[in-house]
Image (tube, rainbow, N blue to C red; front, side, top):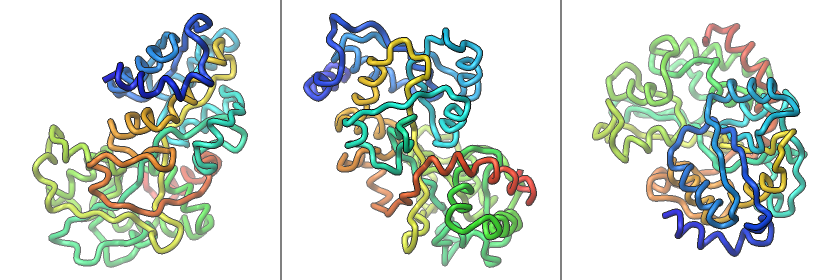
Length: 338
């Protein structure tokens, strides 16, 4: 697989990557815990001669490590999931601006930092799932989750979870602080149980009958279609889904994102790596292996994401998700969505 990927990418990368003779190494601090990423990293090495070292950990741990290392940090790339997390790294002055015609041409404006501090590499959609057997009229928007008709039916994870913080940040931008607070309080009142668990647990709760409606990123559901998800695999026929807000701003999307570390010792190699991730072949591999959506327009969908259908996504610049994050957390805390 990696040799085929490297062959496909070699021509596209040649103009921007260093030659093998010049190449040194690339140190990636990654909070993505997917073994398949190693195939992509090896493809980059095969195409450029640049050796990749992956240092893996939770996003907060890696940010703390980069801060402690300071100017001596070996980090070249910070790679994480959710714009809210990479915003935290940027707020800590751990990322540097990158000006790349390749990145600017391939990554849509709303999926990258306005000054090139980070770039979205793949997209994930926050979807409303529901029990087809018990919910005749499912909510069509995030705002609909606050409707009293869904009292005692909704399951969601904690308000401190970054996915919900980013969703709330987008709602603050769309509707204003006061309306966002009212929405959060009403959704909290409609919950079938206290917020708990991860996204997979919310979908499992539909199967178990604990709730009828749940918020989750789409790829958690799609993993169940591949099998191997306890409590879900083989039990998903009852589950329907809605891509929210198709009649107005579109469905909330988030990203896996990467930026060049502020003290990157191998800056040129780091920029070459980001450009490599935006080639069509790398995009398809990076997104499809986790049932996500490519960040670069025009890259085809894998069968599982395609099975959920096409949808209109919110084109809010994702930098806003970080900017509104502190207020989002305050609102969740105030309404008891903890």
